[in-house]
Amino acid sequence: MARILLLGSTGFVGRGVAHKILDLGHQLRVLVRDPMKAAAFKVRGAQVVVGDALNPETVVQAAQGTEHIISLVAVRRNRPQSYLAVNVDGPRIMGQAAMAAGVRSVVLVSAIGAKLDPHYKYWTSRWMGEQELAKTGVSGTILRFSFILAEEGGILDDFQRALRGPFAIIPGSGQSKIQPILREDAARCIVETVSRPELLGHIIELGGPEVVTYESIFDWFLQARGIKKAKLKLPAPLVSIPAIAMEAVMTNPPITPDEVSMLQSDNLAAGIDSVSSQFGWRPTAPSSWAPNNWAKRQGIRAGLGR
Image 1: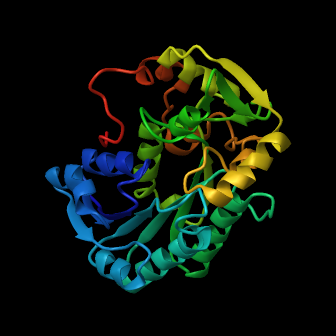
Image 2: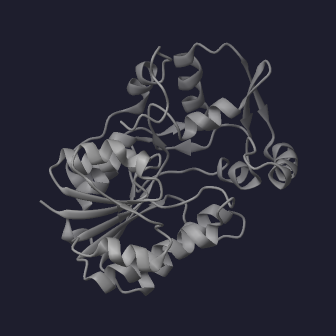
């Protein structure tokens, strides 16, 4: 049984990871700004520490007595918190805290596509965060995932924002290739990495057992929800122009220029068997999972935690 500090436990992926840690019998400590959001973890025996994962002193204190740190802290958009403060500085703060607290290892969850490229601000920030973590000298593993799917949140929010009037809008051709993985399976990979010392020092790219297009995933959503709207594919340059304007004046625009660019690129793991080759089990196929799990049901609300 491991003693694990989880950063980012109340986020989209973090909720699944927190419950998976508890399911597997590990001791869980979470660092959260709002303890009410961690109530479901506390009920199950987790220790809740109140503080900011971007405050170095706070993270050092929270890490005392733990063996491993898992960080899911990241932002996909450059505001209200910036890429620099969260995606770049965050991993460095975690690494330095791990060294100061004598933590055995860390796991940083990043994203497939992370690279130094001025055309992709988000992916560049994730790559820079990986580099900052490495500079601290901590023993760690970086897991890069393709799109992560769950019953709520994530890409579903993007699809919901893309429903405009009589149309379901697709930025670009919708033919970029993606290797989606379910949150439950991604969480299992993340937690199992803690007990896999042979993975230390590696960057591992992971995805589900299918390669599909962005349009295909959008179709799963439309069919599961019974949405009868005409798909409207808009050329990426045409979408980028209003996206620039919306990003300048809206706190939560339907889409950002950076997201338009990323959606035109393939987002694939090292192979179709990336999970089974690393962890020895096969993840669920999202195409068979989505019809039931994305269907609207009475009494189900987003953000319940599991």
